Every structure is written in C-alpha cells, then in structure tokens.
Length: 98
Image (cartoon, rainbow, N blue to C red; front, side):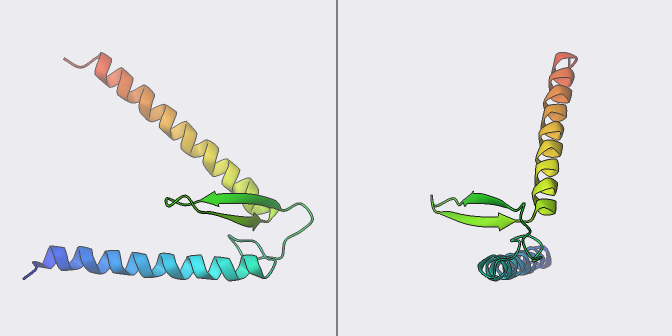
C-alpha cells in the first residue's frame, strides 16, 4: 500500500507530533506551578510575561525566567539577521544572474 519512504515519513511525523504535544503539556505544568515555561526553573523577580498566539486566534499568557527571556531575544535577533542576509544574497544573486 505504502512504499518504505512514505512509511518512514509518516512515522517521523507521528514521533514529532507526540514529542511536541508532550513538550507543550510539560511546559503548561511548569507555568501553572509558577516556573519558567521554557526551562522549568523557579521564576525570579525579573521574569518576563509573554502572550503566545496560536493559529486559531487563541492566546495564552506564559512566564519566562530572565535567562530564557534573554535567550529568546538573542534568537530573535539571530533569525532576523539570517533573514536579512538571505534577502541580500538573493538580491545579489538575482542582480548578477544571466
């Protein structure tokens, strides 16, 4: 019915889905217990509250410790830099193509 490649992809997708659901529930338990949503450590006095938005339009408020908030900010800047670099390289490539 399915070839080996399709079965492998379906198994990988199922595993990724299960891991994502497990991580989401674990993080919800941490946040409900007054801990960091990302790492599970106790929140200090300098924690950050963030509103998460989902595709369906629903929102959820979660708390991050100061360390995780700094890491999230750094990753955001890193992703922005990579997008800018990608756009610049594509513009250069398209201007010199053909």
